[in-house]
Amino acid sequence: MLPDIIPVSFAMLILLVAGLIRGYSGFGSGMVAVLGLSLVFPPATLVPVVLLLEVVASTSLLPSVWGLVDWSSLRWLFLGALLGTPAGTYLLASIPARTMRVAIAIIVMGLVILSQRKADFRRHFGKSATVSVGVVSGLLNGSAAIGGPPVILFFFSSLSQVAVSRASLIAFFLGADLLAAGMSAAQGLITIKTWLMLSILTLPLVCGLVIGSRTFIHTNPEIFRRRVMQLLMILAIAALVRSIYT
Image 1: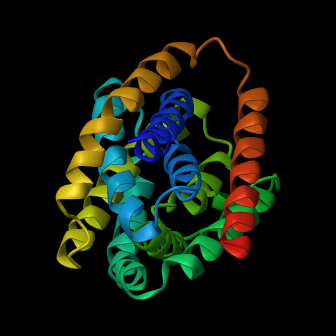
Image 2: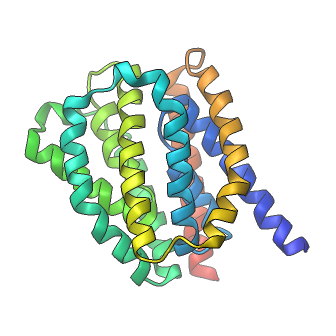
């Protein structure tokens, strides 16, 4: 019994941290959950669970930020996600677990490094470029449940208010994760084990969401953002090392 208790307890801790981050910032929980859970579960098992947990998180947070959402940008991002997600879920069902772990870790490390750039990407993005961001996000979301970074860079590199960017990300993730979860189901990746893991991990996620949402107003955004990126980099390195040496 002990070998089962250890990974489940670790997974619950990861989802508590992921919920804290998501409740505060509106993003980041998927990357933290995927990277953390990849240390103990194969990607084809954990990605559908994370997608469903992301739906739970977005559903919980969206009502309170609905009026702040930038719908004009989201409709083009959603179009791109609709195009990119099917290819992503096909890759998840086809690529070996070890290869997928390495790919996830490298992609996240690259995106964390890219996130340090302060350029205002949105200033240079028309409709076609915005759709392209959605395509990349959909591809990453369907294959690894880490579709957030391209859209995060799109919103948080702009001059928009933090609250507007946070609200828009929450709305985007709800639609994108519902789409990716549906595609995963079509590929046969959602099983009884998926629903069992979802039932176990929902409680720590929701607890983290509640605490994180309450600290949103009181925490310095730059300090929190820096700590989130540091955590993601640590988890990515850990996942990469595990994939190489196991």
